[in-house]
Amino acid sequence: MNDDLYRKWITEIIRSLKIDNVTLVGVSFAGSVILKTLINSEDKIKEVYLAPPAFIINGNPLIALFKVFIPMKRYMETKKN
Image (cartoon, rainbow, N blue to C red; front, side, top):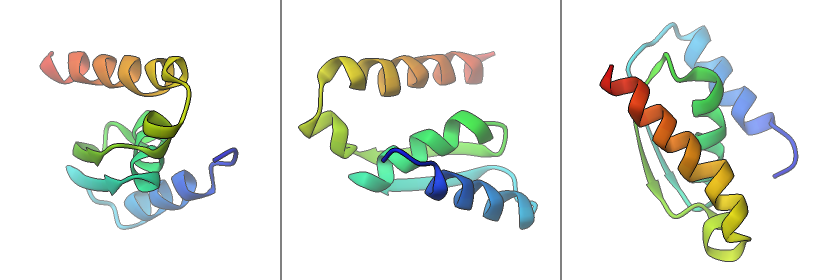
């Protein structure tokens, strides 16, 4: 996914409905969309549940490391504080 249309759409819905503590569930491609949404809306998102995003299974493991696991670790660390 080269564009951020889905991420922007989800972010817009969350903000326009003025909801906090959102739980998002994503399977495959939706998982990667949720991770991109999490980057810009982490203050509104309480938790996420992911079934393997498509690029983890089919893609380059280094890309998965930098796009998924490192941001996820950072997110987990900020929520501990």
